[in-house]
Length: 75
Image (cartoon, rainbow, N blue to C red; front, top):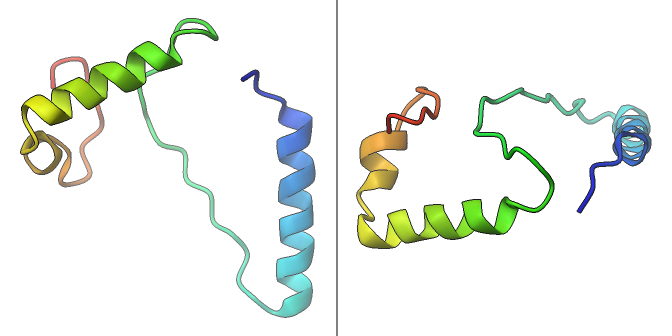
């Protein structure tokens, strides 16, 4: 699915408008460092690869990603 920044911006503007009028807190967005796919068609490969790794070693979720360290190819 292609990324469309204008749709995301419209959504964020609407969320902000609704949040500020209802007195709720504004959504805080955080930028996270994640692996990037080189094109637009590899996402299935990445999902299946990580699913395979998790099924083969479920402890990887707590051993490797329990904390504030970022993903690297070394993990």
